[in-house]
Image 1 (spheres, rainbow, N blue to C red):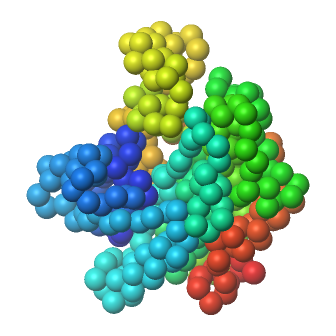
Image 2 (spheres, rainbow, N blue to C red):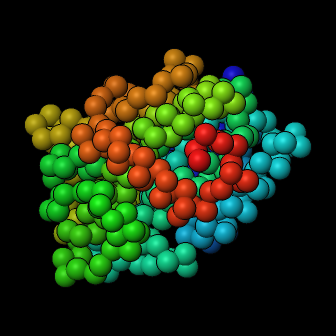
Length: 331
């Protein structure tokens, strides 16, 4: 059923291709694109505008959403839910939590909410957005969470320190500074993805418990390791930028065949992510995907005790209460 698709970080490498695919293949949907900087000064947002402009009849808008501020996230959720309840927008059919952040060259950065920036952008703020808007779905819908093979210890070649959900969960949002910026920065990113996948199991469980949300399902997808992603040249050491330019891009066919079959371009990943979000064949699925194939996720993410502990802590971090979410079974 056509509805509103909300896509975070829609001006990302993957996001722009996902937007293009939705507008060309599923034009009956209304699209809300969120970006950090919606001004005309951001080159990536301007590229997103150009992409939308190629479809004159597109029902697509671009909105600023600062995931570094929970206050901004809650205010944005209020606006969207009001627009949907008033009929200005169709009910939600999907939320795609695509945004993430990493820093492989500096110390952990702390947001105004006193959280680690990587964890807040990649995990906490998007959980808040999803839970605030659960009541704005139609009869059925989907939540799509972006994962990565990095959430599973030993699966990503960039890993120096394994991801892990700490026993003291507050350590997740307030990491210590380390001398190895690249290694620990990647660990924070991988741990954020592990948190996403762990939370997705709990989200499905609570959605199914509540009759009003039982027809909403969540999936997590590893879209592959993207050789043309702008992330490889943002907040990364020079050697990674050289590797992208001189190894990953030119040698993609060889590397894909002999090193990592999930290596690919963001255009392919964008298509897959949007297919999972709106294609009817994925309706009701509550699976983990690698590309478009159902797959297993990391054993740690399947630990129900950890899922429950993280779920409760995330409600606290994200400032979700029985008064501001329709998912009453969550408490």
